[in-house]
Image (cartoon, rainbow, N blue to C red; front, side, top):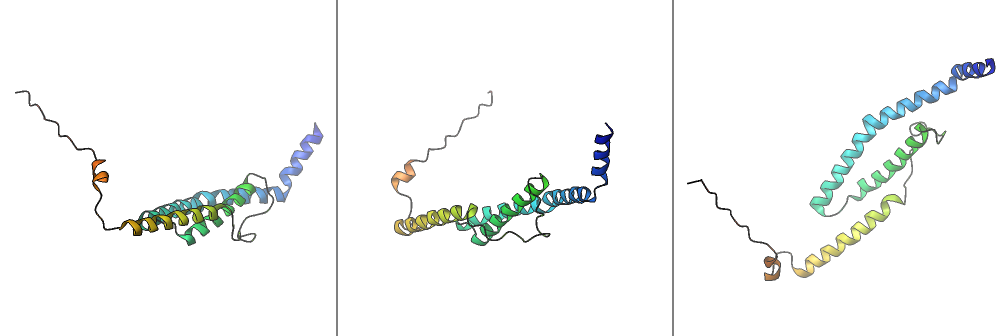
Amino acid sequence: MPEKLDDFVDNVRDLSVWVRVSFVIVFVVALHLIIGPLIVLLALAQGLFLIFTARVNENLASFGSLLTVYVAQILNFVTFNSERRPFPFSDFPEEHAGACANFTTSQSARSAQSDVKLEESGRDRKPTKKAQSKKKPVRKKKLSNGN
């Protein structure tokens, strides 16, 4: 039993363990207070770009891709799956050509196709009879006053 106690005391006295735990706490707080809200802002901005321009912003999408790699590095570090400390103690992740590239390429292609369809069909044209007939008429209910 004393050997186990000695091992425990050695672990508690080991400075590298305390440094690692301190870094884990710092990165968890940074992930929660800084990176989490940044991801929300990024998602809202991309949503607004998509609503107003029918396209995602390529610069924000690229930054989002880098941010996902960075968050993955942090999560690997704080869950003790990696010994490599994330940025600012190592290099910030470089351009990641996988996660976001497929979405932006397919999204741009779909957006370009829809632009072509709009130009071919005439953007200012009024809807055809067929398109108008799809709308259901709104029926007003008569209110009975009890009289």
